[in-house]
Structures are given as C-alpha cells and as structure tokens.
Length: 193
Image (cartoon, rainbow, N blue to C red):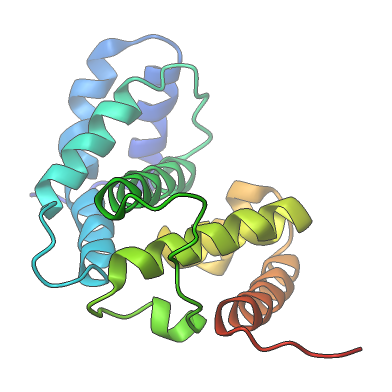
C-alpha cells in the first residue's frame, strides 16, 4: 500500500466533514493500518484469552467513527486521537460488562506502570485507569486529554499540541504532571502536603 501524506488524509477528512460521502470511501483504506496499530497497542494490554480481537475493535471503532458525522475533523492527528479515545471507551465498556462491576467496588488499586502492561487482571486495570482518567478530567480536562492523545492515541508532542491548540511546552508540562498524578492515584501512594 502506498503511504499517503498527512495533508491528503486531512483533505479527505475535511471533505467528509462537509458531507462528501465519497471521501469516506477513499479515506478508509488510507487510515486502516494506523487504526490497526492503535488497536494492537490496546490489545497487548489485555489479558490472555481476551475474547475481543483486534479486528473487532477496529470494526467497532469504524462504526462509531462513521456515525460521528457531527465531528468537524481538524486534521489527521485529530482523527486518530478520536479513534484512540473511541477504542479505549469500547474496551472499557467491554471490560465493565465482562466483570459486571458496579461502581468500581471490585477494582484494585494498581500502579500506572502496572496498568500499562499485560496481566491477568487487564480488564480490571483498564477500568481502574479509565476511572482515574475520568477523575483527572474533572480536575484538569486538558491533562486528561494529553494522556489520551499521547499514551492511547500514540500522538507525538507536536501532534498533541496541534490537536489541543496549545504549545509543545504546555503539552510536555501537562504530560509530566498527568503521569505523576496518575501514578499516585493508581498506586494508592498519598503525599502529605
């Protein structure tokens, strides 16, 4: 498959946002490999024996992306950021259904690093990370977005800055602060002030 420029993908996204359905037909083959790469990154963190497969995750994300006709795509980075967030939401919803947790009562405290690797409890850890990110979002929405875009979306510092319309320095600070906060939150370590 021929590698296409980010500008070509952005142009197709903008055309799709403006109602050109043929742009979506041209776009799907161009973004397919990257969506699979994002899905594989998520699936590596899932426990062995996970019933959802990478292709199913990508297909579910496609369906939700196609249904998101109200989104006004800014560029390629924005598209992949939204796709990554959708995949995280799909897996968290799947894990919640699978574990039938109510209110997170059975969720374990885990360190941020532990939550990012494959383990037997990946579903519960995914839920713990999601809960922590939701709490972070209520405290600092941009820091939570930076984690979504950088860690889950695989975006670089400059791509994240572009999507959020902030400086690269702001993204670096938010990334550093968010990682420290998540580490403390997920590991149960409390620092007295």
